[in-house]
Image 1 (cartoon, rainbow, N blue to C red):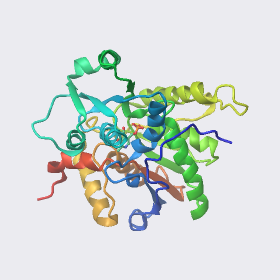
Image 2: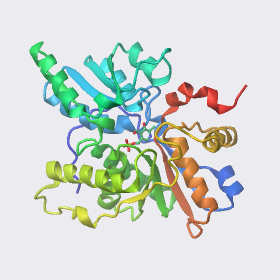
Image 3: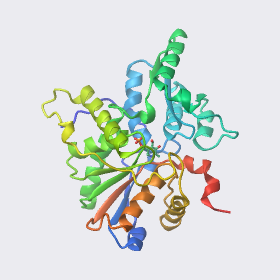
Image 4: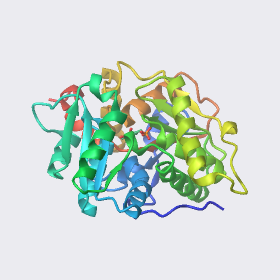
Length: 333
Ligand SMILES: Cc1ncc(COP(=O)(O)O)c(C=O)c1O
């Protein structure tokens, strides 16, 4: 039995698991299913909400009144934190990598709409994130506030519960549709979604490998980061339990062949896949995460990587607002 810690109910779950039959016919390959985690909410959509259900429960239990977190200028995680902070009546301070753009767009527009405080840092300063978090922590403590720091992407041992919980949902989905997929594919950016799913796949006996399609750093980085998040989860929640997991025995699968020009930069082919899936199936992907990962999956299928698979599950982790910020590259009039 898995003993979940307290969580807030912030996400609309369970999300649907849907087959993409027209796409699967077109590919002539395995049946592709999509787990609609882009539907965990409207503006509070995507994978981050599942993690924040657990992380914000911890923040409230500690009496926090101020959330400090970080990410890129178009961070989906920061947007989700800004909106949930407003919903819960908490102050939110976002530490963003880069400089202020001329226009507010996409996620950043919503951050401002929620009146989140935003500080921009050039990469040279942002790389000393721990120092920045410490400075702001002290600043708020001096003001008599109770700050709570959330790491990049809410990827730590607590955030991992979000996708352990999703694995529990997938076990029901697989039973309901009577499928036993060959692989679960996700975009991996800060590793926490993959860490949670890898743990969850084991805990709920999905017998399905979890493949992270890297969108920024290389395979070695993610092998280390996912393992670190799983270890953090174990240290906090699984240490000494009768069925303690042997983390070292859990396989971490990463594909870093489809990162392209770099984080948040997509090739014309990725934009073409985004347009194609929208027109063919009515599914909206984004160029930073879900579109890049889905394009990579299609490439691998076309190259015969999954020739013996009958079913493949892609988890749509959201990211819709990032598409607006890159609208000019869609090639639409
Ligand atoms: C839309 C979207 N998909 C996938 C990811 C990757 O999730 P993780 O950071 O847990 O690796 C993120 C965030 O990084 C995201 O915003």
